[in-house]
Image (tube, rainbow, N blue to C red; front, side, top):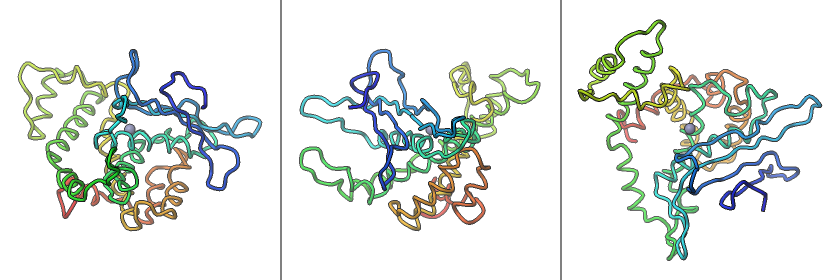
Length: 294
Ligand SMILES: [Zn+2]
């Protein structure tokens, strides 16, 4: 066991398939405990980078979550949404783990703010793939794989409320941009009501949603990056859709053209290099059920 800050935490060293020295390490801190951060997140503990003596500093990252703790005779049984969260955060871990950027300013997740979520948004697609789920999603007592009918039901329900959720994301992105416009001195609630009306949403009189909108701080006019990253992530996934989600050659190409480069190359260029074409929003529109089959 590698040492960690709590007995619940597990450390993993990452090796190339060919072996050799570990290239990175990540920690999984998955269960709740008093005083711990309540949500799910990934963080860079030590970025990969070239040191002044030309040696390579191995990246170390952590995935923090609050999954159901295993109990006597009952393992931690993840809901599908928890699985999606786990894959999402692991997308950030992969980004930090596989970086080959020389300078820490561009290491792994240090990309443009409106691209950083794309590798994670993309990895969420694996949670909906029968070929992936059949590898581990089994009944904890009988060992039976997830029934086809159950998975088909999950996929069929994927786009419930996708319209309203997307409009909410658009409204909040627009609001974030409005508040951060140069010289903005408006009434923040009136601005909110106006933006909501513009998006076909109703602002409830007497409420102040903006006071609990934590992404207004830190993201500062870049909240739209979540939705934009989804557009980019869905687009990148089309190559895996064509080749199969577990195709090693496609995975290696993705690693080389996107993850290894961190923020050293313009995100648009990385997407072009991986897809071999110009970026497109078609897969995103299909994914939320606006066009064709999801
Ligand atoms: Zn994320």
